[in-house]
Image (cartoon, rainbow, N blue to C red; front, side, top):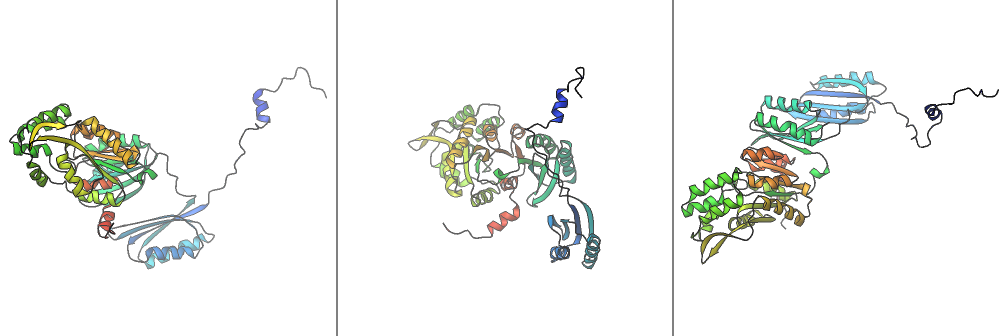
Length: 427
């Protein structure tokens, strides 16, 4: 029969639906999620529990999808995610019987598939407390949940001199998580560092530190000023500069001018009086063992930093140089001043010389003249810093132990102590 001329023509949409598009991707057949069992065992820890559990599971030919184990104060929590066998009921009965024989408690939960996949935006969150209170943990975890994050794993890095734990968090961009946790960390008086997960965290790095009140406990120019009889005047100018109230270069010239006429021989006495910050040697020794390169950049003086380079085996250093004529300081510095902008330039120069990408650098400082350097680095750490610096840095450490920086890099106290117990081969 011929088509009636009045019959409506097929619409474009109908035509498209009727004729598959040649560019449409082929349908991917879906595979049903396999059934799994989550086996949880908990109780008093003793040797052989892990072996016993998996020996029992092996009798049923199951595959291990995932398992985790934690021991805290002699109590074990062991979880195993395995494929469900045909004789699931028999397996359950034997698991409970084995657990009772070991004086353990066991729980078996059936379901489908693997663990819930971790969300996009993965970060490591390091929390340092001295002490770490339950209220602080509650507040921080609530912040993580509130911005859409999920805590996937928790690992203790250290129990002394501070309590340090690392949280693996997913589901929220690192920058968003950092912004959410920073005010809560300040409110709870704990230190929190948030860094993006990935291979870059394990890559070879460059650490650049400020010197005065960071690597060492002293302000070097004040040590010189004590010999010149103008310590109080210099300290007042230094404090104002570190708070960002006056330009650093201006403050340096004003302080150095007060040293005019001081005998150059006091350098040896100043070097001898310098006190390293607790944990400084441990930090540098551990970083060097890991293949890191370590640098210092200082608004202080080469008369002291050169000695630190030799004593600590540092790779790079930059500082100002006091001018001396006929054995007396002139009250001036030689060459370009290492100021706030200069510190950032030195960081970039050291990174190039070390062959390290700028995002793989870590900067540590305490004063306003460190801000450009902290912001330029991949990770900027404010160490016992002035408020203006703490607020601007990626993270802050407010305990007087410089080696706590290792925890922010995911290095545990046990790893540090193990490394210290192993003799390194002589080069």
